[in-house]
Length: 443
Ligand SMILES: Nc1ncnc2c1ncn2[C@@H]1O[C@H](COP(=O)(O)OP(=O)(O)OP(=O)(O)O)[C@@H](O)[C@H]1O
Ligand SMILES: [Mg+2]
Image 1 (cartoon, rainbow, N blue to C red):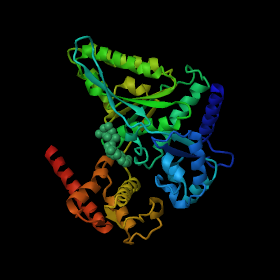
Image 2: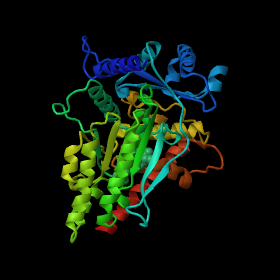
Image 3: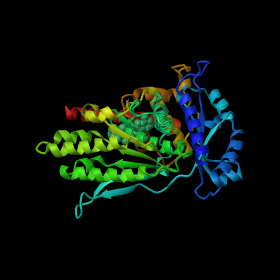
Image 4: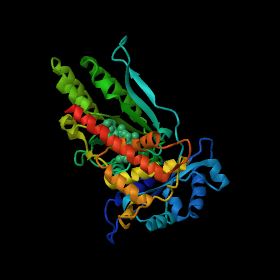
């Protein structure tokens, strides 16, 4: 049985890897994964749920496939399924028609339940009688908290799919027992870029996505977010011991072959800073950095481990660390098209929750270029607002709709989409003015 499953998974991965290259006719092969969240109360076998969802899907119309479906006119699904989502490879470059054709074709299913607890704080002590340090936060995946995070991180480039393929490929190499002295892979990803561009969120979302996509071979995922500040900036002589203990705990987790473990080291520059700042105690700081690097090296042979790191000041990351990262991905500020999509998701959410009315028909960004630029429809107004918003981070952009509502709209009654857009514009101007003021104070 086990062999059969392994064979299956290798076959699946081979297929996944095949997507890297062009197929014979020069077209990139595409696949669609259907993620089905099973209801907590359902004890139905996932295969039965899958079959029911499959026959439901074949009756869907074009528009249904853009959304995560949560409302079913089917008593069986109502009882056993929380949501259904279609995930397309290379989403940015597929037309609606292609999407519908793909959904009518062969589908790959993941049926899973969400863990609702977490995070748990891991405390460790350097020695007996020492003060405990909050060393890490720990989630069992997939969990409710990170559901939808992936879909709501919007990038114009294909960075999300590239990261998923990276993980699939590391597993393929491990499955095929590729000699790591010849093809080296450390399972370390480094995301770097300006503040607020979604680096930390993307790491968490990736951990969740991997736990879902690999649910056919791992029963669950684990995410350990190391609290770099408390772990690396403690008195250095203690830090070394803390790092050892932390990694010993991680080792226990990866020893379970049924779990896929992601370790997130956020703001990894604090490691390098430790080395620089060390002043009178350089040897201790260097020992800490070395302890981390040695641990990372020792763990790279585990196929079920992924190390995710982030930084917003690339220049000062420890070079020994940068060198170990397989992927060093720059995450930049969102483009006009990405901003448009971010605003669009905000409007959709406000329409869904009935706070805003009249914003149901915002056009997909791909069709904007065919519109007359003088057109004054909602979509074109939003497109112009997106242009005015360039230079702002995703973090700021996600707040502007809230500020617009709070400061410039009357939310005691339903807000018309035109008033909402006007509020958005005022909030944006205000944001810019505030930033200018802060900048001039700095100068
Ligand atoms: N490209 C984006 N698309 C959608 N939302 C985004 C994007 N970038 C950032 N956000 C939003 O901004 C918030 C902050 O993101 P996050 O904390 O992950 O950024 P970060 O890059 O880690 O920032 P920092 O460098 O300050 O640690 C998140 O809630 C996320 O929803
Ligand atoms: Mg961050």
